[in-house]
Amino acid sequence: DALRRVREAKETHDVVIVAMHWGVEYQDSIDDTLQRTPAHQLVEAGADVVLGNHPHVPEGIEFYNGALIAYAHGNCVFRQSFDFGNTHESYVMNFDMTQDGVQNVIVTPLYLSDEYGIPEVATGAQAKAQLEHLVEISDGMNSSFDIKGDVAQVTPK
Image (tube, rainbow, N blue to C red):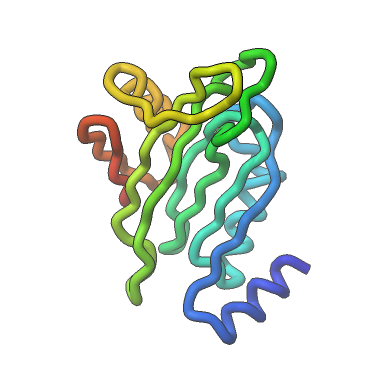
């Protein structure tokens, strides 16, 4: 049904962005059956961007057939009563949609440092550690990261 809806949307819209609720909680690795294969199918059906969430931790960023796939952003505004893995880490992405596809992808790491789960922009050593982790978990996903200060530009390899 999702693939049909994406194909239909692509017939009448210039840009199709799909939001998915998927993945395994607290795991920063991508599940091929639950995430990667469906993401690729969504892109093949016409999605320009696929944004996922659910695992409560950041997952990798992939470029596939010119489309951008962000598997999970982490806990953006949600602080759990326990810290399991990287549940205090998140990121936001800014990007431009052009006739040539997704351009100027910038990732800004967030850190949920208080008991209420209010995100703050990560800076310094915290930002560097989070961005380096995102690079690591995006390995093999056709993504190249250029870390500059507290943000990273992401481009296809």
